[in-house]
Image 1: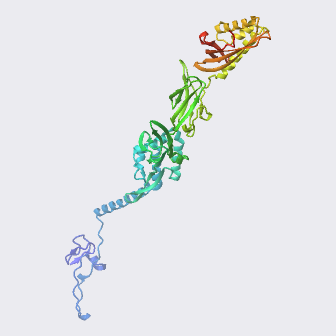
Image 2: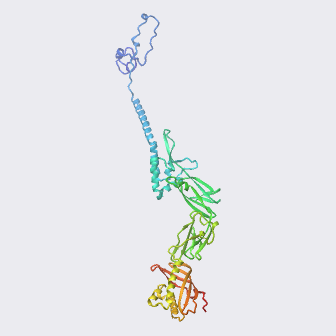
Length: 497
C-alpha cells in the first residue's frame, strides 16, 4: 500500500498515480522524507544482530505530509472572525471616546443650556437620600435661570462649567460604569437648606404657598430644597410677614444670609402726622385711622418685615398720597410708645400739598395790605383796589372782596379810628379737592384811635370754614369765600358793646 505524498490517501501497492488527487506517487518515493498522514504500523525489530535483521520494505518508508488547500467555508469563517474582532476594537475605541470625561461633561453642558427640567433630571443625581431628583423639583432652578435678571449669571454658569467642570450647586461626579467598561459621570445637585427664626412660638411658616410647619424653640429648619428663589411667609394671629430668599449659591455672596430668615412679629405703636386733614392712614395698604387735627394714633400693630405706612386722600376727581414709609424692626416698639413724644411720631406729608404755614403767610399778606389801606394816610384808588382784588377768586366780583372793601372804607371814613391792624393765625386746614383747602383761622384786630385818650381795642374773631384755592399759574392762594356769617364767630369782643 502506498500513501500519497500529496493528500495522504491510501492507495494500492501497485498504483502509480494517487487514486484521490492524481499525484505521481513515484515523486513522493524518490525525494520525500515526510511521514504520510496515515502511516502503517512499523514492523517489530528483534534484538538480533544487525546482519540478521531483514531489510525494512520500502513500503514502510514515511511519506511526505501533504499541504491541504483552505476550503471556502474556512475562508468565510476567518473573514467573519476578523470582522468581529475589528468591530469589537472599533466599538471599544468609540466607547472610549464617547464615555471620556470631557465628552460627557460637554453633553451635560448642552443639556444645561436647554433649561428644560425634564432633560436636566436625566443627567442629575443627589448625594442627599432625602432629596429626590425630579423634573418638578428641578423646575425651581430652571425657572430661576429663565428670569431675565439672571441671564448674565446663567452665561457665567455655563462658561464656568466649560472650564472648571464644577460650580457651586452643580458638581460632576462618578456614577458607576457603562457596559461594565467605561467610567460614567453625572451632574450632582447640591440641595440647599433654610433656617427660619422667630421670637414668638406658634408662627406658621409657608414656602411658596406650602405650609412647612410652626416655629418651635425659636427655629424651624426646612430642606432639602432645590437651588432657586423662594417666597417665605410667616403668620401669627392672622398677621403675616413676607420675605424673599435667593438660595442659589453660584455667584451669590449673600447666600449664607439668605439661608437664615428671621420672622419678627412684635408689636409697634406710633402717631402719624400729616398735612392733609381727614386723610386715611394705611398700614400695609389697609385703612387703620384718619388724620384728625393733623395726626392719628396707630397702636399695637404686629410688625413684620416690610411693614409699610402711607397716607392717602381721595377726592371726586383726584387721589393724593404720601410716600410709602417702611418701618424697621426696632422702630416704634409698642412698649416704648409715648403719646406726643417725638420718637413715637411718624410724619407723612403729601407732596404738592400746601401747609398751614403757607396759608398763614398768604393771610398775613392780605391783612397787612388791608391794615395799610385802613389808614387815611395811604391812597386807596383804583390801582390799590385792583391789587387787593388779587387775593380773591373772581377778583372784584367776589363777595368777600366787597366786604373787605366796605370794612376799609368804614375805617377810613371814621372820625374816631385811625387804623385797624389785623393779625391772622391758622388753626387748622384740610385739602377738600384738587388744590382746594378748607381753612379755619383766627383774626386779631387792633383798633387804633385818633385820640390819644382812647386806648387801643383788641378783638378776636374766628372764620371756621374759609375756602381757598391755590393758583399754580400765579403761585398764590385765592379766597373763594369765608363761609358767610354762619361760619363767623366772635371769640373776644374786646369790651366793645
